[in-house]
Image 1: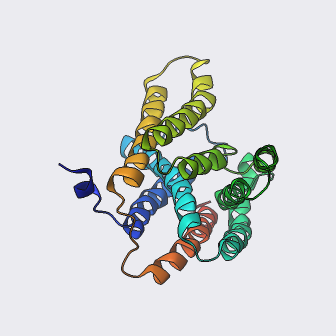
Image 2: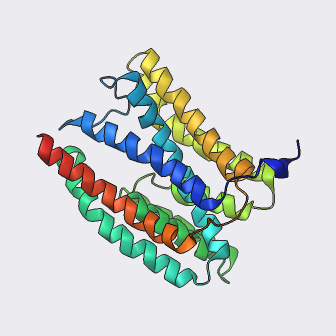
Image 3: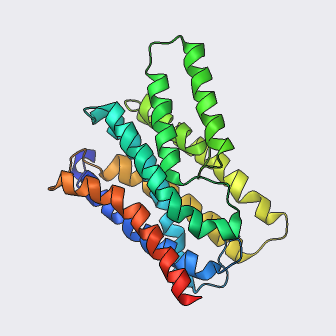
Amino acid sequence: MEKSRLKVINRDVIKYIIIFFMFWGHLFAWLSVGDTPPDGLFADCPFWQRIFIRLSLMTPPVMFFFIADGYKYTRSVKKYAQRLFIFACITQVPFTLLWGPITGWWGANIMFTLFFSLLALCAWESHFKLWQRIALIVLICGVTTALVSEWFIFGPLIVLGLHIFREKPKARLIWYACVWAVYILVSDIPLYFEGFSLIKLESTAMHIFDFAAAYALMTVFYNGRKGRFPKFSKWFFYIFYPAHLWLAVILRLVLK
């Protein structure tokens, strides 16, 4: 079968797929956490709920991909950055209300990571000398880390790799795999220092599956086209993220 025959899913369908898993995964995760900082394992959740929680991790890689894709096709990078920043600020309110009492008040939501990732692309494509562009990217990654923005430097690094190696599939895959391998080493391996368990192995296996499935959606099945209602979909995705955080905040208050 030719590769082109597999490219049957447009941009908006991919986004609807990932936000479906994100919504239910986040909902089950938030309801299971209570007032205790999450350990990432969610051992108290039923297996079927854990599957949704794990599959929600397909969302960040796809979001990072569409930042790189959006940079290429947007009519105005400036307006694109402004939208991301405005909705990052809007999202920060429910994000802080949701996680502040549990994990601490210092931290930024993933919309800020997307914003900084776009800035990193702008720095890379600027007319500065190479060392200056690299210095700017390092600075942006430093700010992302200092703000404890979700996914830290992994967001900008993934976005940069997907953009730089857009026309080099092998290099793009190697970059993607290496960055996520480092992420798994940082996030999962320390869990095994306290001992081995099947649920830890389940978590690691699902991490690998999520990142592989996200890559397949982005590179194998994505046909590069918009959906039927691009304007509606664009604003729906911007509004949905803070809205589903507000829903979680309200549910937590009601169920307490």
